[in-house]
Amino acid sequence: MSNYHIKHLEEYYKVYRKSVREPEVFWEEIAEEHFVWRKRWDKVLSWDFSKPEVKWYEGAKLNITENCIDRHLRTNGNKTAILFEPNNPDEEAQHITYNRLYERVNQFANVLKSQGIQKGDRVCIYLPMIPELAISVLACARIGAIHSVVFAGFSSTALATRINDSDCKMVITSDGSYRGKKTIDLKGIVDEALYECPGVSNVLVVKRINSDIDMKEGRDQWVQPLLDAASKECEPEIMNAEDPLFILYTSGSTGQPKGMVHTTAGYMVYTAYTFKNIFNYRSNDVYWCTADIGWITGHSYIVYGPLANGATTVLFEGVPSYPDYGRFWEVVEKHKVNQFYTAPTAIRALAKEKLEFVNKYDLTSLKVLGSVGEPINEEAWHWYNDNVGKKNSPIVDTWWQTETGGIMVAPLPYVTPTIPTYATLPFPGIQPALMDENGEELQGNQVEGRLCVKFPWPSMARTIWGNHQRYKETYFSAYEQKYFTGDGALRDAVGYYRITGRVDDVIIVSGHNLGTAPIEDAINEHPAVSESAIVGFPHDIKGNALYGYVILKETGESRVHENVSKEINQIITEHIGPIAKLDKIQFVSGLPKTRSGKIMRRILRKIASNDTSNLGDTSTLLNPEVVDEIIENVIK
Ligand code: PRX
Image (cartoon, rainbow, N blue to C red):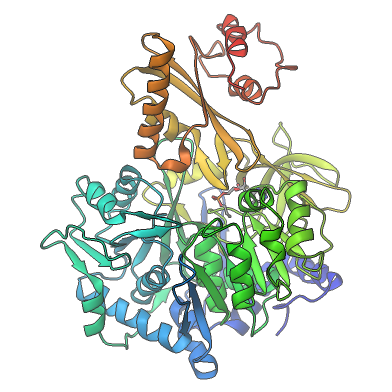
């Protein structure tokens, strides 16, 4: 079992050194010993970042669901694979064993086939956090269809854009979803989206809230009767290592979202290996990641990584505040959760509430606490460490991205000493580089720069669906022969990494990655708006919130401004979703611009953050006078 489970720091360094010195030998051994293959690879790795082209385990054949399900049946068939905890605590939890998961995935896969879905077809999944979400993901993988899960908080316009971008033939959705006290009409959102999606001929609907919805004849079908009639056996489609497994959209510097394409073998190996080590998973543990499967964290660390290790993974439908702020801890106690993985924004929201919500539950089962999605601030780190972990559970601050597929920099619990706000050390196989303004790699420790990765790792995205050129420009053009992450980072005296935040036009709001461009595009749709600029500003719970500077075509009364503000947020909700709403909107007569016409966001960011002490030289701007006006009317 060489290298698969790292147990002490010396061993980490040894394994890490090997992974850098002999990457192919290293990744070959991991792949050989811990997975089932239908055919062995011919070549472990070939790569060229200038194209960019990366292939792992070329020539190998496999099906990821055989690794995530079938191979566990003989020894662990009756073990719980998915532990479903519903939104309403009075509704009973469901323990879906590996045996049952096998049957349910196969039935779903057979339904997909009977509806004409074939290997390589794209299927859009727009579902709440219910078992059918994980099951339909795995069913796609079973037959080689490419799943594109769209987070069920996205609006109909955002959904339509994503369906069309990858030509999905089918949408899988539900009659609605529960969210705390509320219900959401998901099917209505899908109906709305599909007016714009001529390519979708088939909609499968899961019944969840028993609402009375419209079913369009010839297009929409309830999935349950089809599942009931389907066989529980479905031969897995045998895939090539580099066949696409899924597409997952992330926002970027233009209005069009980027469909990151992840392939099969490398993704499987890397997510499984990182899961085992970063969560220190042992065979009878109960692991819970609170993310939604609509994000990469859910793909890699609710579904694929845990199941590839034969783990028990909790799938939680609810929210941390319902029926009260003790819900997370109630679930931890009830299911004796051993590893708990959440986002700093959730921790900050819970830290604002009474400690009693935490203290009344028995949290002694916890062994590892995880954090992901944005830098965790010191205060939140201590609250998590003191009150949830009782100073007994190491916090793994995991840095990674949709594009990286798996965790890249993180401590190994009980192995790497942790420091608040530090993601600490690169995972074996990951070779980070910090770059200075001149494009040179910073050598040694105690340096700060832009974070790149200079060697391929198995779970990296291979392209942007339908736009390889954009993939190259976005990630491989800033620095030669390096993958550029878009983040800044520092490396301290002992080589630990601390992520300092985005250095591009992406803002992380409540752990959600939001590009400014798509939001500005939405605002500019308002008939009264002539131009806008969005920046982030610090927010107690969300980490960052959005501040919009808007120029109107005609200036009106303040009452009118209020209406326009509401309408702007309405348009954003329709185009993207409520997560992208602006907290503050300031109407301005102009935006500070360079002489070449570029908006100086740095200045706008400082003003929005109430930090106007050092704005730098504004005299070179095209319109320096506008800066004073903006400062004067800033919204506090
Ligand atoms: O800026 C980093 C931040 O989230 C970005 C990636 O967002 P997304 O693709 O949505 O994936 C989120 C879940 C993996 C990164 O570029 N980020 C993520 N985790 C951390 C983080 N920043 C600091 N510390 C982290 N642990």
